[in-house]
Image (cartoon, one colour):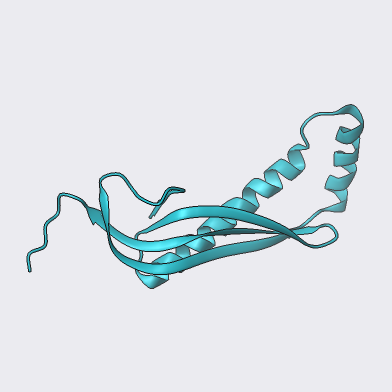
Length: 112
C-alpha cells in the first residue's frame, strides 16, 4: 500500500476514490516511565521512553488506517495526516487519517 501526505502519487493516476479512512490508538503513560521522565526533566534531554511510546502509537494508527483502506479495496492513501488529543489525564489518542484510493500506473491504457 502506498501512503503519502500529498494529494497525488507521481507516475500514478487515481482510478477510484473510496473516501476517508482512519486508524487510531489511545495510549496511557506508565508510572515507571513517569519517574524516568521526571529525572530527565531535572537534568534535561530527550524523554526517550515517551518518544518510543509515541512512535509505536503512530505506527499502530498508520497500520489500522491502511487496514481500513485495504478492506475497501484501496491500494493507496493520499493526504495522510496525524492528529492527537488528550482523552484523560495521562492518556492520549493518536489518529492517522487520509483518503483511500485505487491507483494504477499512468502508462496503463484502458482496454474497453
